[in-house]
Figure 1 (cartoon, rainbow, N blue to C red):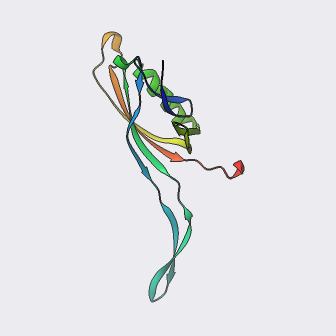
Figure 2: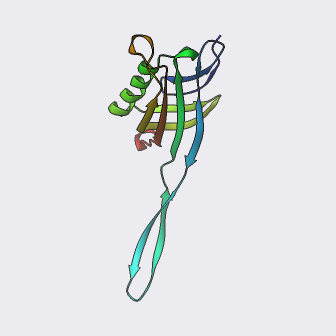
Figure 3: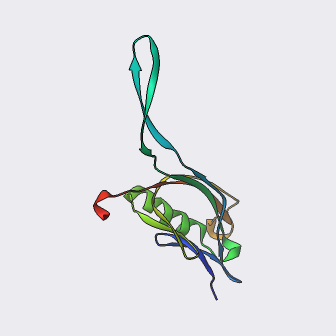
Amino acid sequence: MDMSIGSLGGVVFVASDEIIKTVSDFQQQNTARYTEHNIIGLKPILEFLGPGLEEITFKIQLMAYHGVNPDIELKILQDMRDTGEVGQLVFGEIKIGKFIIQSISSSEGPRGKYGFPTWIEADLTIKEYISHDDG
């Protein structure tokens, strides 16, 4: 029986006896936005504009011996990035927010039988997606 840990859109993070597809090294970065007003002869004045967009980085290990097809799973993530797909980031019952995949950096282990990789580790950077039309 699969135990869903969370998801990013249609990509489900799972830990079970047969399949392991989880995230690690999860880091969040939150910022505030300011504008700087220059004043002749004095230091500039900062004006708070509001919160910035949240950025999250994490790793996903896609291992064939954990019931995952690394090539297919990486392709799904790349397609999400390349089409600008917006996905809800969820862990357990908690909805973190809507995010897009901004970048993917990956490395892979040796290729085994039939040329398939035994594992791929993908580093993802996702960025918060806000639509003011959502209300």
